[in-house]
Length: 224
Ligand code: FE2
Image 1 (cartoon, rainbow, N blue to C red):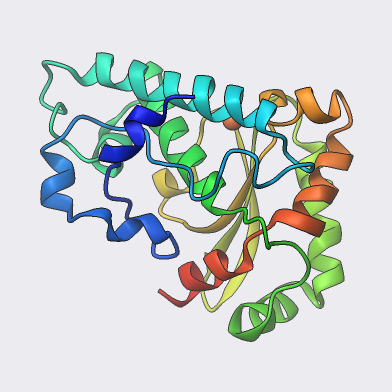
Image 2 (image 1 turned 45 degrees about the horizontal axis):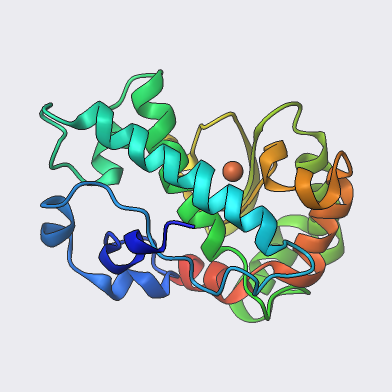
């Protein structure tokens, strides 16, 4: 686990992230892209997502995307750019894939909480009811999309007008590239769940919704 990187986490710009207090954008832009600290201990999501999975998913996969990205921007005119600026500027390919994966994973960790799971409340709950008919209908569609995303990708809840919508992206693709406002996400790459669930992606998606999803984070993003 690359804990050493945690002490110099980059400023994050999504509103629901507690880590967004870590610095301003000017400061962030003056640094290389860094691996943000996890918002909880590496065993905090156990048994639904174990520390073993976190050690690879955060400590190896997420860290590798950060390292790859820094190698790709080093010496270029994007060397001092923010992560969002890199994503905005990048064409399809390695630069975009690594930058988007850094952003997506940071957003994913924030989308979960040791005290998460269950149904949302407040304005976000009302928006889900308005857009899907009910929380149960949202859950059914979110589950079907997350389970049914063929291959590697992500399933997102995004803001759409005054309401919300579910979006699937393939591989590294991220909604912020397409002008959408993500509220929460689940990583459905096999590396997110294979050590804990093997091929049982539906069990991983159910655990995410029942025990992990951070509705406070999503609500803060929705309200921003
Ligand atoms: Fe992942």
